[in-house]
Structures are given as structure tokens and as C-alpha cells.
Length: 350
Image 1 (tube, helix red, strand yellow):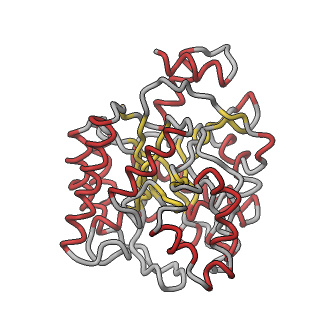
Image 2 (cartoon, helix red, strand yellow; image 1 turned 180 degrees about the vertical axis):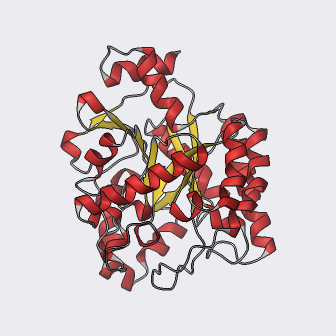
């Protein structure tokens, strides 16, 4: 999945309606400014997800909660999410935070917070226990995976295939997490792609991230320089962003506002993007757990940004909601004997 030459991009027709999936990193609360700790396992913010569910329902959105071990193993969290899943109001995937997921064998540090950096057997063991815990407590085996801190590695694809996963949503296009040992996605674009063996073909749905501005066509080449030590020393990213010459935007209410969401979406559509992924972290729906929501006013603004974006996407752009699992099923069921690109074209025209 990290070897770009081995991946098979999926070409979606330019005239198809844009599709939107919502992925929620569903996890314990912890101070993002402090070192990782195995002691941070509280999941009180899970109960606050119902505020967003009311918004999702208005637009026919079925979000995918990718849950980590503290969530999957805590009865109160399960009792909040399981009824939603059983009612068809959400889907449940897996999200591996190694430092709070057994077996606890590795040193807790930044490098090991990326699951893909662990020894293959340890990464596998942690994902086995997480997967089995989700299946036991929710009654369904997850098929959608998102690595904690986006940390896929050289062994992740084979582990996912072995455990029956079908979709990965870990890739963040045009972005590197190499400062503390994470993966490098700078060469990866927004298109979905197939990876793995043909007998156990997996689908990658990248997070929606891209460039906007007069220099957006050169963003993939320029941004690593702009955001490097020299560029940061003269505050070049901020200067280019404010002047709308070049800005990198993620489709998330965490760190981007509604105007930026609109700019990104329209820019990606012009580049041929038809599959969009909107994401955030579950603790952001409770005041004080993430840097993005520190007051009740910020929480109201956060929820409003969801509502405004979904209204824009569905009503202004004519978009449609989907889920990672549903999209993959469409591709396979519409043309099971076709190539990935042919299957995508048939599914999009259905």
C-alpha cells in the first residue's frame, strides 16, 4: 500500500455525482501536547457523538466510526455506538492506537505510536485483539481500518488481508509524518486505489486533502519546500495561504473552516476527484479534549461546520452519501469480472 507503483488507481467518470463518506477517529481522551501514555483510556466523550448523529440523519449520512481498543472494550462506549450500528445509522471499523492496545510489549514513544513501525508480529497481535474485541462486543467483524496516526507500514497490507479487512482509510495525500518516524504520503494523490494481491484485493480511500490557489497545480512539488525549515523560518506557508497562492487543506473541521472546505472541494473536483472523505476525532465533540474545541462556542461552531458542509455538498453540488464498505461493494457487485477501472465506471454509472 505504500509502494505507489504497485497500487492500481481507480478512474471514476468525470460526470458522476460526487460521493461523500464520513470517517470518525473514535478514541480515548488524552492531552495532545503530552507524551503518549497507557493510562489514558477514558472514553466519556463517546456519549457526545449523538449531537453529530442528528446532523448526519438530516443528510442521509451513515458515518463510519473507526474505534480503538479503549472504546471497543468499554461497556458504556459500546452501549452508545452499538444501537446506532444496529439501527443502520452508523458502521463500525477499527482504529489501532498501539500504546493503549494489548499486548503491551513495546516501549511507549512517538516512533511506536505508528502501528506500522512495530515488528510485524506485534502489529498483527494488536490488530487481532482489537478486531476480536470489536466482533465480540458489537456482534460484527470490522472490515474498514484506519491506522492510528495514519501509521501504516510495510506489513500492514498483508495483516489486513489475513484478518479479512477490505478497506483502508489511513492515507493522507501530499503529507509526510516523517518528523517523528511516521509514513510519507507526499507522492500519494486523492484517487482511490486497489492494493494487495488480486485474491485479497483491498481498497484504499484516502482522506480528502489537496491544494488550492494559483499555484495549486504545482503544490505537490512546491509544498515540501514551502513547509521545510527555510520556508517555515520566513513563515512562507502562512503568506502563501493568506494570499490564496498555495494552501494545503484537509477536509476536516479540525483546522479548516467552511470557506476552506468549499475551496478544497471545488479544487479537487476540477482535478477529477469524485470520492470525498470527511473526517474528525470523536473527542472534538466534547469541550476541552482537543485543540479544536476549547469552549461551548467552539463546539457550536464545530457542529455548524458539519451542517454547512453537508448542505453544500448534497444540495449545492448534488452529491450523495456513501460508506467505505458500500462503495467497495458497488465496485465489486456492479462488474465482478471487470478490471478495477471498469468496475468503477460501471458502479458510478449505476
